Image (cartoon, rainbow, N blue to C red; front, side, top):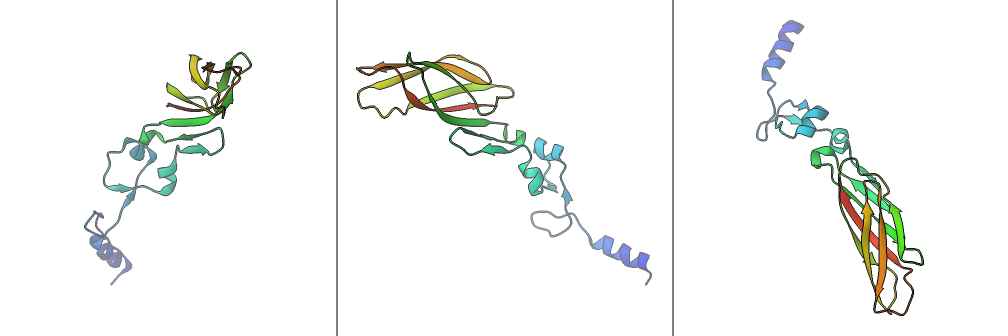
Length: 150
C-alpha cells in the first residue's frame, strides 16, 4: 500500500466530532466565540479568556468579555471632605455605559447614619455628597461603593 493510499484510508475514517461521536474538531476563531452561535467548533482557553480583566484589590474591578455582555463591576472605598462632599475616580473608565453606583456607610460611627448620594457622574467617576442623619458628629465620612456598567 502506498503512502497516498494510507493517507486516503485514514482521511475516510476521520469524522467531525459531536457530543455523541468522537472525531476531529475545528478550533473556533475569536469572532465565532464572540458571536456565540457556532456549535461545531471548540474554544481554546486563550480565546475563552480573551477580554476578561480583573484587578482584585481594595479598589478594583472585574471586566467580563464581550461574548459575556461586556459587563464591568467595580468597587472600592472613599471618604468625603469635612463638608461631606467629594469625588471618586473608578479604577477603570467604563468604555460605553455607566449604569449606577451604590454606597454603604463604612464610618463605623454609632452616633449617626450617613446618607450618601451621587451629585454628578460620568464613565470615569462620580462626585458625591454625604449627610449624617441624627448625629452630633461632623459630616466627614468613609464609605464603600459598588458600581456597574459596560
